[in-house]
Amino acid sequence: MRSKKSIRSGIVGAGFAATFHYEAASKVHGVAVEVVGVHTIDEAQGKAYAQKRGIRFFERLEQLLDAVEVIHICTPPVTHEPLAIAGLKRDKFVICEKPLTGYFGDGSDSFHGDRFPKQVALDAALASVDRILQAEAASRGRLLYAENWVYAPSVQKEREIIEKTGAQILWIHGEESHSGSHSREYAFWKFCGGGVMIGKGCHPLTAALYLKRVEGRARDGRPIRPAAVSARTHAITRLPNFRDQGHIRCDYYDIDDFSHMHVVFEDGTIADVFASDIVLGGIHNWLEVCANNHRAICNINPNNMMQTYNPKEEYFRDIYVVEKIGTKQGWACTAPDEDWMTGYPQEAEAFYRTVAYGEPLESDSALAADAISTIYSAYVSAERRGAEVPVRVF
Ligand SMILES: NC(=O)c1ccc[n+]([C@@H]2O[C@H](COP(=O)([O-])OP(=O)(O)OC[C@H]3O[C@@H](n4cnc5c(N)ncnc54)[C@H](O)[C@@H]3O)[C@@H](O)[C@H]2O)c1
Image (cartoon, rainbow, N blue to C red; front, side, top):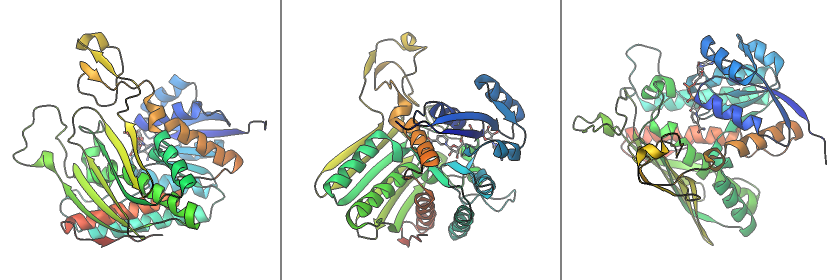
């Protein structure tokens, strides 16, 4: 057995994603990972995060970069490009949360997501991707794209089936939906680079792009890439006649809360990806693959690994059931280990093995770039009410 290599890492950001990234990094077993510290712009939050975990708080990003080989970018999307480039310039391995980057407006107070040409967003997002890819090409480090759906156990099992059976995927459909994000910033295009189509749609989309990549790689030694996209977006909770009954978040400023992307790959096969913030009953994340030799339904969440029936809400007061469930009463797909089904620990394990031993990287910057290119082309299509738009691949 080889001896474990030691790797020092740091977290940037101290919110929701920073919490599950730390948990996942702590569970890596093939590499001796030492998370030495955290950096965030919110000093009080950063210090509390550090104290809780017995790690250092770094006031400046540069100090953290000096102390580690790997950083985890767990900050809002608008900050990803500068942080990733800063890490790559110092030859660090950069684990970057989704989406890789995007277009965050023109900086003016009057900027509104409904009222600007989406071609501007596409051009700016692709330019941002270009800058990140160039920084990576010039670096001894690497960008590891934290798309957990790639590492979800059901998606990895599907990878194995495709590789071993030489399957041709004909149609993929999938969805990520729930009743609304917890984050205040999520309501604004300027912080997140769009609405639900990028924020949630990126997950099933990237899994679909990944599996077509796997198919091409296994059969012909080269990935099958996206070629064109048609899309619709809607702002259902901003409709004047939306009737709020208190179950669905509805305070969005200028973003879409429903989206559908129809992707055509270069081999003519297709994927349909739904994402929305208008679905009750807990998180609804799934991917179905219809191939020429099999069919697979990859349930990310909910999962029926465990089901519970609770006759009275109060019995489960201290029990975590499943993400975004509105009530704990009645039947539920209770999650014994939601992080595992979602792919967070498997993602961290794979990333640290790439860093320490050079093992192949499944979710890399090229996959992230294809996702950004497809999504912003989809915003252009949605502006044209579904007309097909070509996807530029890097
Ligand atoms: N993969 C997933 O399942 C998943 C789930 C949630 C969020 N995310 C992604 O994680 C990222 C963070 O989202 P979140 O929900 O944790 O947000 P959050 O608001 O909970 O936390 C963001 C943190 O970043 C810090 N921050 C902001 N700007 C910074 C800067 N310039 N430098 C350093 N720190 C800065 C904030 O102080 C805060 O600590 C986003 O890209 C989001 O899309 C991914």
